[in-house]
Amino acid sequence: MTARRWIVVVVALTLLVGAGATASYFLQSGPPGSGGFEFVRSVPGERATIWAVGDGADGGRRAKAVVDRIARGRADRLLYLGDVYERGTADEFRDNYDTTYGRLAAITAPTPGNHDWPRHLTGYDPYWERALGQPAAAAWYAFRAAGWTILSIDSEDAHEPGSPQDRWLRSQLRTAGTCRIAFWHRPRFNAGTHHGDQPDMAPVWDALRGRAAIVITGHEHGMQRLHPIDGITSFVSGAGGHGRYSLRRNDPRLAFGDDRHDGALRLRLRRGIAAYAFVSAAGAVLDAGAVRCRPAP
Image (tube, rainbow, N blue to C red; front, side, top):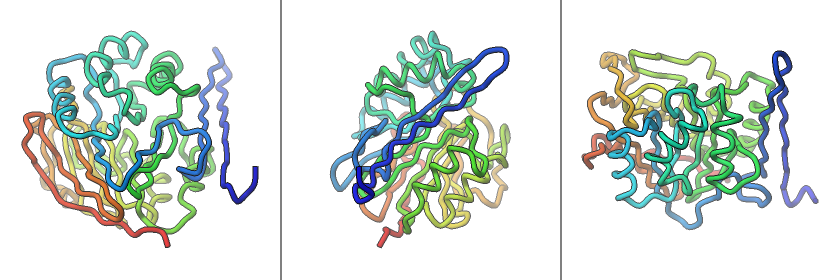
């Protein structure tokens, strides 16, 4: 295996010793698209349509309406932004996720939510191993689509400076350019009234500064687009069907917000540009525009 081939397989093992021992692990090829293991396959072609939504997998009617909307449109990948209610158990993945977002599982790029992570070894991990046909659940990984690198971050696992996840992320950001989209569950910046900003996500945000154009998160049940911060446009897409939280509409960072509709974020990608739209479950476009990125030399 030569340096020219740029294939690195990383196995991270975290052991928690106490009342019982648990382990979480991932496998990732790097850089993305270079070969080796990919938890989520890259999207071929010069254009791609990516949907992103979280906080909806409760088996309910409203969640199913959001999934119906996504399924009616062309979807190359769905970024599911976390939370299978209420505790992310194997039974809830079967009864709540499979009956709603599960119909899109084969094209889904998942990231865990705060409801999922405490029982991820028996719920999240085995579900996604089966659904995606891979030998290990990867909560942090990368794949490619239409000239963009898309990075899944685990906001529920260790991500402080020097942690395995932090080192992996920084290895993915070594090359110049900003044509990267990062997604995770709990937003660094948030104009919602329920959860607010998540200061513990600052190390991830700081690593992405100057290396990414878009960040997408869930957790706050609603839709938000913030004015660019540090050159990054961040979206909150947590209106997946499990209730909604009100917004602080006077938050000066808020460029668009909606707390009245269920819906999802749609990104139509091509090299150097991402056309975004928040689309309600009924099909109304609530907000739309474009984010440009700076390709690597």
